[in-house]
Length: 220
Image (cartoon, rainbow, N blue to C red):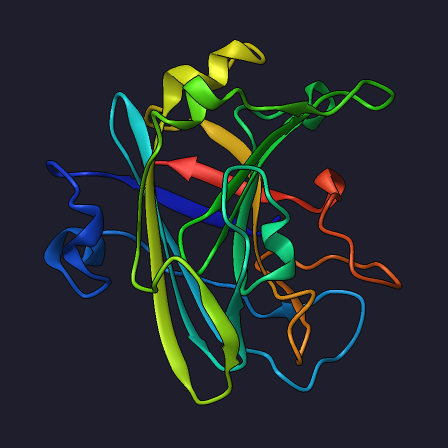
């Protein structure tokens, strides 16, 4: 199973500190490079990093992109249609209890859902919980028309652990704990759509909702 080591933050993490800042250099880098459901003309170089402390996960993405677009405007809009990166995870080792999907476009607009056990209704994260997530992005709030020239963009966010407990019992991060997860890149409604993952997914078409293909997050 593909495994990503989540390092413990040495101190406060400035989300706008930059990919090359000392605090983010402490984190391992996960390449999001496996095509999902096809072979795509445009495969942007996408990298993810995660740090943790006793209260939150800090998540950052860097994308060397082109054909960049962002038209989603508010929480829970269909950001997957824009230039978008995603983190899906179960806060424990058993994906049968459900998983979270946090999807964020290049402008920092986010969708946050909990996908419960099969047969149960998808739960949208309430706005009062969403607003406790700190978000930073390097791009303006809207990117339209599409940027066709090479563009490198970054997003980062701080995800409080306590909001996860509103949906299920979590296994708190500490040394040796394993969660299940995958990182993704997509851009469904751009001129050059693509679907990429960190842990490989064997599927005939694009489908990120495959917890059976999650890798592991191993906490330092």
